[in-house]
Image (cartoon, rainbow, N blue to C red):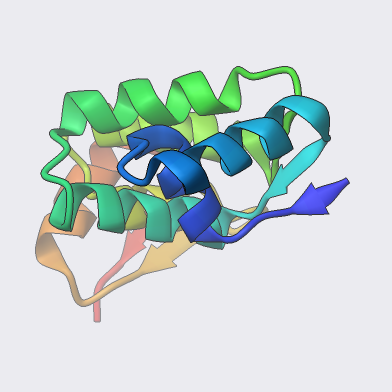
Length: 129
């Protein structure tokens, strides 16, 4: 299994550098690929801020990537839940934080918007700070 960096994922999805995109596609096609949540988090930020991906196109791209036979995601259940919440309007990073809360039963934040949105999407109790 090979773990990849954000730039490999971005080249694979965007294909803005034909040579690197071909190498990334070959790597992903011919190997089992491990993608940590941190790489997905950075990929979302890069695609949104540098390439102008919309929320909908980000969800489509990341779900298509996750659906490939050779792709293995860190905590795929949390990633899937975070993508659902992101699609519903939560910031992707915030959604991933909430979905990755593990066995916690409370979530503390100073971010009022996250607290309001998150309380509608998860059973975690909000801790006011």
